[in-house]
Image: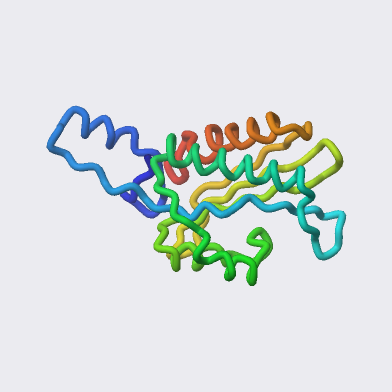
Length: 177
């Protein structure tokens, strides 16, 4: 679970353990997160391009991996981003809009904005990037990047699971090292 005990979000294992030991202790409500679809960035194409059908399928796959992992292991409550789809289309791509995801997430009632993009390097090498920001301030609270060295569903999904485990929800926590 990610809690709101400070301006830096952190997994609340200690809080969960304290609640287990003291049944009367109440846990904080789960934070709401606007988890936006993972986007494609192809630096080899001026002005960008739409994802091919195979790429769109893999982007949907890693978006679902991210959403499920942050919900199941991070304790976040995902909010539906569809009501702001027109605004995302207008301001997007989100990886290039200089923090526009935070106010969009705030308009959705979320505490956090989660964005991600896959940067195409070559036919078999990609960079997967994920950023978690506070919806109210736009301050980045977690981020991670991993290189994908094969273009398969399994490698893309594995890369997203690795980022969540080793970067987004890993110790040491920001400001706690």
